[in-house]
Amino acid sequence: MPIDITMPALSPTMEEGKLAKWHVKEGDSVSSGDVIAEIETDKATMEVEAVDEGKIGRIMVAEGTEGVKVNAVIAVLLQEGESLDAVAAPKAEAPKTPANDGPAKPDTARADFEKVAAADMNAAKNKVANSNTGTSAPARTDGGKVFASPLARRLAKEAGIDVSAISGSGPKGRVVKSDVEAAKSGKAPLKAVASATPAGAAPAGGMTKAQVLALYPEGSYELVPNDGMRKVVAARLTESKQTVPHFYLTVDCKIDALLAAREQINAASPKGKDGKPDYKLSVNDFVMKAWAVALQRVPLANATWAVDSILYHKRSDVAVAVAVPGGLFTPVVKSCETKTLREISEEVKDLAARARGKKLAPHEYQGGASSVSNLGMFGIKEFGAVINPPHGTILAVGVGEERVYADKGEIKIGQFMSCTLSCDHRAVDGALGAEVLGVFKGLIENPVMMLA
Image (cartoon, rainbow, N blue to C red; front, side, top):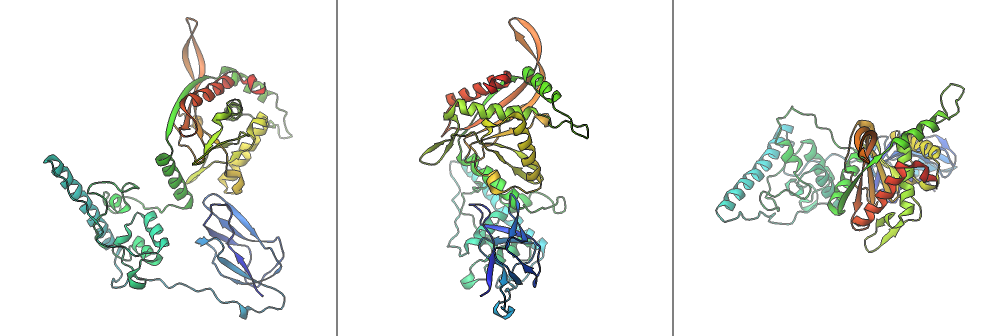
């Protein structure tokens, strides 16, 4: 019997992915362990291996296809003696257009966008005018239930389109995926609809796509759809700021001793055959080590919120923010407190390099209890970072710079670095956050104490 090769789940939260590349074609023979395809998620590109031997009978999902659901059949493997006749060809979905509505030009769709936006703006003006006379504008409602598939609702939400403005081509006018895609591409016009949101009020996600587009002349911008990574980053950070009660604590750390220690350690690095040192520590390596040790010395701060419980972690698994084109990765250095500065340096460089190439495995960027985000290399003096759920804290590190300071009545110049700790107030209270940040400051200013 033919064997189905299905879209694998590369992480516990993965629902769909992109079939980035096929390494085989129909008719090729494969053995168990052979790499047959590459799957791309919002975070990584992973290889798919054959689990049985046989011949690729049919490829069901074309290379480059996005939105392939987990466990969907992507190819069929024939075993010895089996025929291709037993395998049904993949069904090609014909593009649909909304019933009762012919195709419309992109500028027609834009005109409908602008009508909806103009209606919202006029409603807002009326609300302001009414508020000045002691009355308020009545809230507008749908006037009826909108029938749409769950996928269509999600796609419409992601595109910033009110699903009730889309004409449905499914049974009884049900809005389906192809209707949303037609509306997004401008092939089908949007209906003018009444908003269920009180007049003038912003929807839960802020301005809609239609409202944003209506503010700018057509041709004055380039519209670039968000890829999977940007959508996930946007969703997670929006969720974080809306659901996690952040508060911020800042300290200035004197780093003269740290810089001197770094210089001495780097100077002692043996040289390779090419004359380059075997290792070169960065300030961030010291920050990672100091923060990991601080979390061990104040264990109640090594915490994450779990709805009806708090997890107090035994290890200091510290994530490090890595900027990549179009988004952000947070690979995790596991048991960071147990590793030497050199080990931390080498691991962070390896994780960062593979993150930029989307070659990280899910277990390398999931988990952790805290993060470090360092923008000092960009000259940023101080900033407050957004917590990456379910982490309880994130440490934001600024640039090291010369500052004038007073020491026992004497004016001196030293190297200082500002660090801001963002805390989830549900798991880490103010005094606790101040305590762990104070321990971190002591370790940074006296780096030899990291080894004690």
